[in-house]
Amino acid sequence: MFLVGLFSLRIVDIIDIILFAILLYEIYNLVKGTAAIRIFIGIIAVYLIWKVVKALQMQLLTEILGQFISVGVIALIVVFQPEIRQFLLMVGNTRIIKNQRKRFLFWRFKIDNPVNLNIDKIVKACQKMAESKTGALIVIAQQNELVQYISTGQPVEAKISEVILETIFFKNSPLHDGAVIIIGENIRAARCILPVSNKANIPPFCGLRHRAAVGITEKSDAIAIVVSEERGEIAYCYEGRLYENATPSDLSTFLENLFK
Image (cartoon, rainbow, N blue to C red; front, top):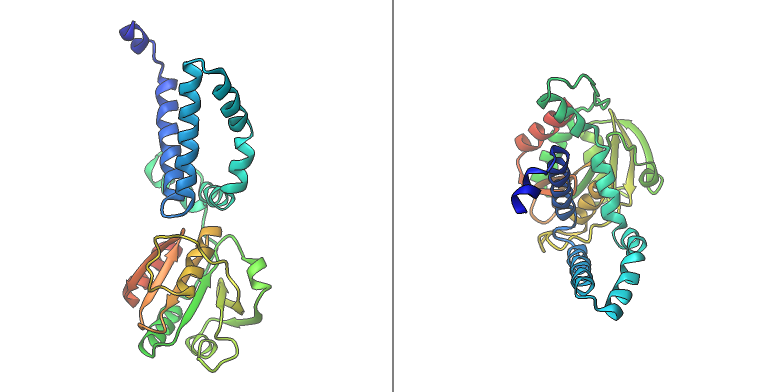
């Protein structure tokens, strides 16, 4: 009977299993390192227990757990709202489509990144601020223009330059506290307030700047650059991942690969 069932397995069933495994893997990557991973494991445990008591025909537990499972979808949306948001941003990220286009010959769509960024000036400003141990948080927007975060800061509307970035983050400047948001070739705002990440795997020596950098990249497709005031080190963050101890060359290569 097992062999008959095996041979009756369709190609569509195999694809279904593979896609489900990929979906579980991506969900695990989203919740890994956050408090949500424990909730995720707890939900799986409850579901497995429900299946067991249902198979054993334990009516009372089956009814109680069944009611819990039936309203679980709404609870999942509430509890995992940040993770669902990040997953949808990942699915809608045109960079993923561009990468897939390189792998498959039949892919004919072309989606260009419209951002024209002055990478050299940003990197040089970060290098100088790292050498002088001037704390900085720079956010570079992509498709998401971060309007809700720009509105929390002070409008600047200036072309990107080393001098302006260094002046903004000078410790006696009234604009140094908060983030600078860059869109295209322009600095749109300074002293912007960003969401702070609750990830548990962020190194303990990282302060609010690093957590804000992770937070904004969890909720949008932006890139965040951090210059540590205490250690004089550069770090950058993308898609919720923090890359520490980056050299100016590392930062330049990353930005060029992303935007050019």
